[in-house]
Image (tube, rainbow, N blue to C red):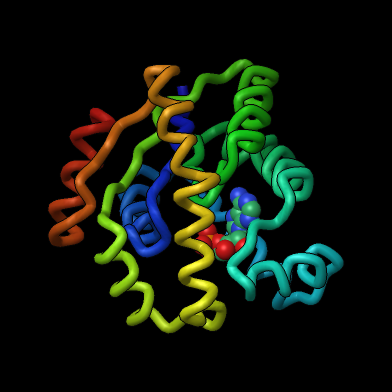
Length: 186
Ligand code: AMP
């Protein structure tokens, strides 16, 4: 069956980079909710207008909005055929529960939730260097706080379901990718 993989990790842990490698190597479809929201902001859609201020402040867009976006995307033919890498979703327990229900409805199983583990001090340093538009010091701090409060509990959620795989995210990109491949048995 086409893989359904969740990629967890603090902002700046290298999720985007590792997803890009998995996409080019295996043709799995990358779904980044952050990228989808940034596209909506750029296109000035209704969603973009609602999300813009929240994103700038480092807060989280509501579960209701995010679940709707993802449910629609996951039903698309490319994902049914090639599988999906979910990057940036789920971010709360409510989102994880909804995702579980969506996959159950589709009759497919979650392959794994991989956690690319990089310590807090290291990701803070990396994010400062990245300099993205919504990367103000305050927004970075708020996002990392959100992660510890809202997203870190998901590690437990997936561990309880025997789906969690922890990957050491320190070191060269190639080394981390080799660990990801090994962990997923690819
Ligand atoms: P990211 O590129 O994943 O770091 O996402 C950038 C911003 O988009 C986040 O700081 C949130 O404001 C918002 N966002 C992305 N994904 C989600 C999600 N699953 N739930 C809530 N907000 C999200």
